[in-house]
Length: 105
Image (tube, rainbow, N blue to C red; front, top):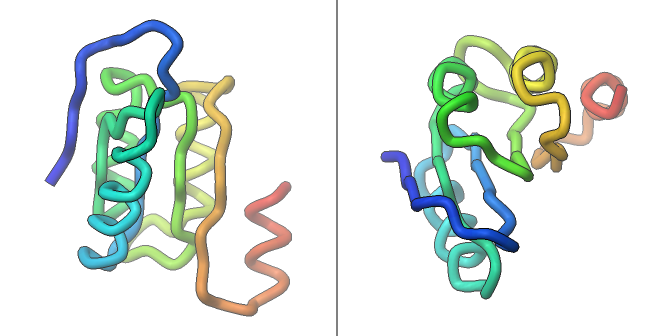
């Protein structure tokens, strides 16, 4: 399920990409309750986020690394080509240093 809000000035637009529905909805609920933050999209895979990123225009992207299909690292690369100014926060429960390092690069 995706959330979309209309544009409001001085509000940080947040997009969440997380394959675990419970975690994704928890992030959306917590962040959406903060003043000056709008959840503009929630996605269970990188493909859907990539397809929507131009229209939802997030300022911040929370991206899981381990996703079905395109992984989070490739998803970040593709999204940054479309929206280079979008800031990315990597979310992961994995302790794979190599994956985390690649995501940061």
